[in-house]
Image (cartoon, rainbow, N blue to C red; front, side, top):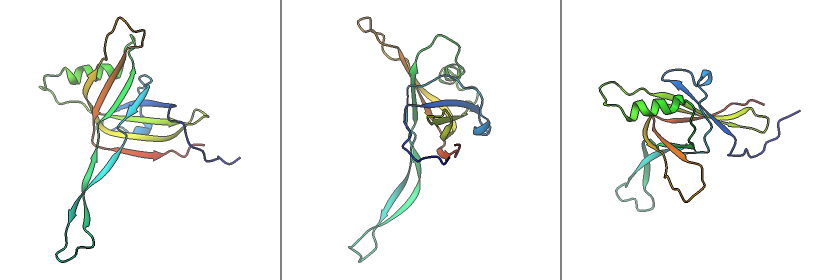
Length: 161
């Protein structure tokens, strides 16, 4: 039976972490679920060049790609977290040692629980860790945010049916 094309829900995803230089598809170290991920985007910066005597248009030339930091949010859990340990070591570093980068893989899952798309976040490293606000007048889950700088994001269609 052929796979029917349909829009995939944005709420069913998982995150994996691997060391720098490790193939993302062999990534190990499933850490924890995240409730929100933002910054999975890339764009090309351009520069406008005016041609002498030509007033009808402007030449727009590419100058390089840019990407935003990726931000991942999740509820704080009391169990050991490889990602939290890495963030603690990096953000609390004295910079006497090189910062260790990782490959982060975000996989969007279909209703059959199989990955349909993946975003490979190359050479990522934590630049910010926000534990949220403590407030005794609210009954809410404490949410932490991890922000990562990186060298680029690639999207892959996994084609798994």
